[in-house]
Image 1 (cartoon, rainbow, N blue to C red):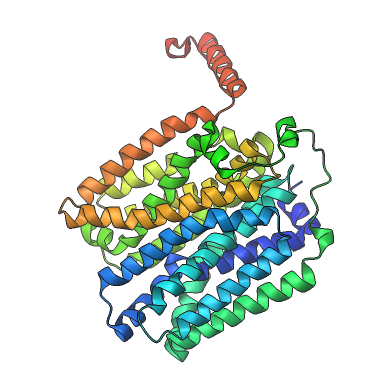
Image 2 (cartoon, rainbow, N blue to C red; image 1 turned 90 degrees about the horizontal axis):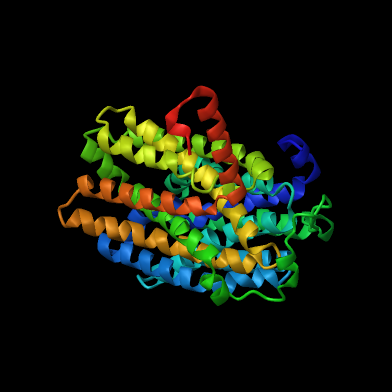
Length: 425
């Protein structure tokens, strides 16, 4: 089944997934950062103070996410979505009515939990739960909302702020979220669409059927968790940290700041392309076959931005990073189901999502400490590359043994036929 056929058959759930990930942008760093200058000016906050508010709110959100996110396994999807939307809308309105500095961290907490955390969690969890044979396509299509939001919403929000003001723009954001999500969830997302795929379920593991309940403490004791956790922590940690200091990177390279906008567009396009490429490949070969390799383009991107002085390096950096992020978002989400099953995927995903949210708070802080210490990007880039190389090496353990045996067999045949001593394993 190709993408067009899949969308025609499952258009309601596909639209729901894309809508939820796209609207999660209102709780993401790249949009909330647009409001920071106005908040700092109105409440006379320093850079250090507002970044502390944001970091603490993000860490608290990461702490709450496993407890709140696992409820999606026991609460109906529509009810969970509407409850999360209520929290999202209240947070947006609370932010808009801020009268003192203490409103800001409270609003950040609600937006980070509902937006960055739960909206994305709802989208990918529903795709993972209701699809099996076409899970890769479903997750990939839902993940398209992220680059869609990155490409479209920042420019619109800046225009909106310029026309009506930052407080009033938050009212419009709340109206947009409430109208789209509530109407769609209540009137379009009917129970008939919330059923698992009817295709062959023969690959459902017997182990999953025997499990009555899975606890997050048990997940954290498993070897699968420790295979996934470093990867899931590192990517948001590194990318958020480097995005946070993208102006400093441009200054370090001696480039014009105007190149950043073009680079972000290239990042969004590459991410969308790799997301769509990942879906069919995951459905055909399973996610674990690609887990170690999707990080390689990111390794290349860091090498390029560190070592190449030319202006084109910015676009190579953004494109290769986008390829890793896009393919990785689909791969990691599908791999969680392959490792832990579908029944309690909400419990599993909420735990890993909390790691992701936490890492996005740690990255900018740690990179800031390194830069403030005077070590500069000459230290940031090689340290990041070293950690990434180690994670790639450790991720190879996810490849099924039969795949490794197959590759060794093929390499032996190549070595025998072409008489290359290098391939005689």
